[in-house]
Structure formats: structure tokens, C-alpha cells
Length: 134
Image (cartoon, rainbow, N blue to C red; front, side, top):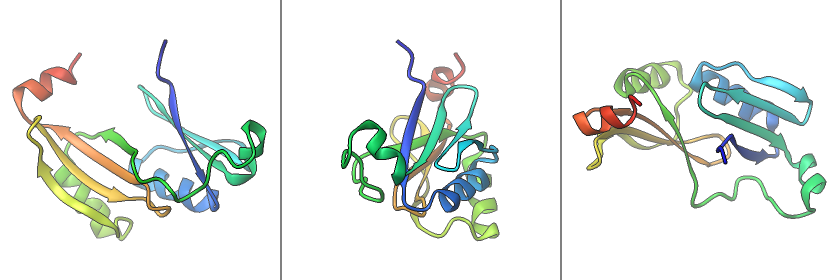
């Protein structure tokens, strides 16, 4: 089994796609007006409008209600990314500025426009660097 993607359901797909394109630097591929994907070398962030929910099961997903999942992206230099995103005005809801975690990653925790938690991180200890160099 391979983990391939995570999908975020939203009421405002264009806004969320534009936000993730800006903060990640990855261009979205639109399959339909209700579904877009930002593909990275290791996984894909899928974004879909609420109109897609009934295709799976009506009422099974609701936008802007996430209270437990953090979408994480490995970046080269989290401090530089933080400065660039703050200077550009696209990073307005920072939960925790760059902080070195006990497990060796330097992390920036913020919310996307729907309130979903996003973590950009850079491994900074030898163990963390080794873990992500595989």
C-alpha cells in the first residue's frame, strides 16, 4: 500500500487552490471546476469543492471543520519560507512561528483560509536530517 494524497473539502475552491499554490510554489492541475491537485514528488494535496461530497456519501465531509489533522510539507529552510510568506502577506494566521521541536524539526504552524492546520518544517538535527535523507 502507498499513501498517495490527502483531500481537503472546501466551500471556496478557487481561494484555497490559490493559497496553496502561493505557499507551496506548486501549480495546481484542475481536473474539473470542482477538483484540483497539487502534486509533489512524494504526495499530492487534493482540493475539492463541497459539490463532490455527494459522489462519495452525502454529508460525509464538511468544510472548515478540521480540528485534528495537520498537513505537513518538508521545506529547505523554514525560517526563510516564514519570512517570504509573511512579507508577501499570504501568511496571516500563524499558530506558532518557527520553533525547533524535540524530535529535531524546525516547524512553522499556520492555518489555511479554511482554518486547516499546515506545518512547514525543516529537519535540523542529525537524526532528523538522516530520517528525511532516505
